[in-house]
Amino acid sequence: MKKTTIALLSAALLIGGTWSSHAVQAASQVEAGQSAVSSGFKLNPAITKEYGGAVFELESLTTTPQSTEYLISRIMPETLDPEIDRNLMIMNYLVMDSNGWIYDRIQAEDKGREKPDGTFDRYYKEKLGALKGKPKELIILPYVGGNYDDKSTKYSDKASVTAKLSDNYPVKLDQGKIGTMTVTDVKFEKKRTVLTLSIEGKTASIQNVGTWLLENGKAMDYSRKELISVKNGVYHYELEFPAVDRKVPLQVMTKRMTPVTFLNELEMKVKLQ
Image (spheres, rainbow, N blue to C red):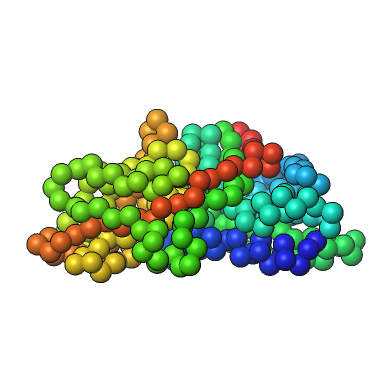
């Protein structure tokens, strides 16, 4: 496999802020209150997909009452088509179940390894929260895109979209080609401020990553993010921020993002029941 491809595949995990500590904290919150379909479920047999000569194999999928984890190995020939090679270099994964629930990443690794027969490949291993309820199927869907539309820095003002917060909701923010985000409510409490977001479509988990509360123009990071419900394809999230002074000007900020293309050829569906 090309060395540039190896390096960039690893770097792709950083795109769009998906490696933020907030995503880790949020997934941990979801994990705590969910039950797995079956304790110790294991994938058998493996699922294999081919994409322009590249071979992807879902080697394992395990679930426990606390978490879900899967491992995908990949072999990419030197003769890989340049366009396919570019897609694989910036590829990321979305994991959802047959009920439409999307699972946030807790942690992941992308590494090379030597196999027992002496050959080499790369693998991607991801840990997610526990399965929600009892879905019949888990879907692993690779995608490209969903990046901030200014590549200089994720904090660049060029990609920022802001809206004032008052007592009138909903407040809609245009995120560019990826879609829109709507603030449906804000709860002001003594020790925290909670924003409720509504986002339509399965890119919701990508769109909500870059969201900040601005107090007097100063950006605050959220300490918790949790998917609280899914209804008719609309995802509802809670984002928790530090307590604020309601008398000062408040805004919510997000980012314009590039569109998402799902690589349907590599979609993997795992029967859980």
